[in-house]
Amino acid sequence: MNTLLSIEWRNKVLLKMATLLEQERDAIISINKTDLENYKGEDISMYDRLKVDDSKVDEMIKSVMHLASQDDPVGVERFRFKHENGMQVYNKTASFGTVLIIYESRPDVTVEAAGIAFKSGNKILLKGGKESTKSNLKIVDLWHQALQDNGISTDWVEYLQFNRTETQAFLENPTQQVDLIVPRGGERLIAFVKQHATCPVIISGRGNNFVYVHKEADLDIALDVIINAKTAKISACNALDKVLIDENLPNKEAFIKTLISKLKAFDVEILGDEALSKHESVDAFESEDIWYQEFLDFKIVIAEISSNEDAIAKINKYSGGHSSSIITKNDTVAKAFMENVDNAAVYHNASTRFTDGSQLGLGGELAISTDKLHQRGPIGLQHLVTNKWYIYGNGQIR
Image 1 (cartoon, rainbow, N blue to C red):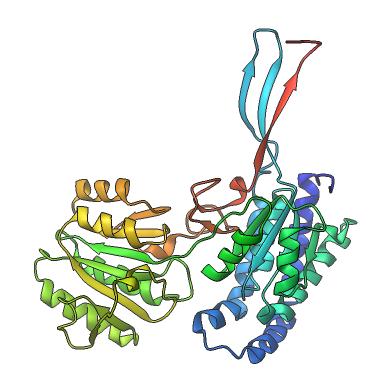
Image 2: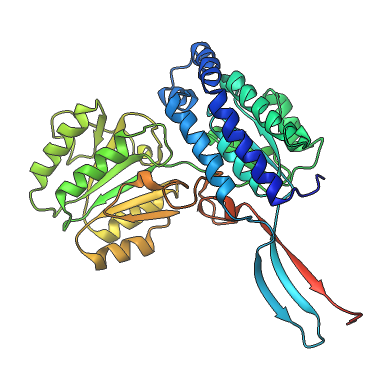
């Protein structure tokens, strides 16, 4: 086990990492182009996640700078109690020890997620996808340089160049201590990790997010939210997949026609229920199973629904437990929706695209958990800790 680094040394490494990312910006982008050229798949969301450009490097730098400015999440007092026998009892946050991050196609995870885990006092094991190997190894080299320049062992950040068989073997019988695993990727990756892991796993689950347009909706807000949530970044887990429209919405037909037109301007494939599929440019979906699907593509399902209660029930049955939004001027209806939809993040008159650590005030995120333990939604710096009891006595026995 690595001895906990002081917060001063952790911050020095993060600030050095920011400097190196800026210095090596062109090299990172150039190496990433090789990964992009080697990617032969047809998954446009995978390609989008794989790509590193200037704005992605800017985000990486911003994330480590912000982490360096944040308070130490380790050693924070959560509870204190003085026992009647005189013992002083404290509960404080503590690092997990070693965190393994398994991820697909996103070189920025090698900076942002690793940075959060490092600032939280953990040793980092990284296992990226083969499609981003060159980009990831370049960034890990920078981590090692940042550590070495501060006289700290490079063991704190380790990259595992394992194939699938080797990864499975490591999960089932780790050759070193692993205290927590965070899979970042699609449902197949998450299922694979859950099946084989022998230590706790934080599930960063699927999206399949919903917007419900209530009969008292502001229709301009509804249009803006739907278009943004669907088209701004289709590879994001907070992107929109399903729209439910109140069948009693005034001017419903005109609203639907405008919505279809705006979605078609972005070449979004529109699938609809019986009521919607009578519109031009909307295809009827063939199976109810489509309600379970996360698309990560320019594709959306639109349907009519009879009430707020029915919308809540449908979302709770089919969604991935990630994010849902209600568009309404009625605060009472919105309150009922937000309290009863079983999602990590619920919105009133805003886009699901804000379910993101930096957007919700955390500065960054390790993952977005759809589990209810140990943290739900974006997992920021202050959540990537466990806890520990400190008891001070002078000979007390029970």
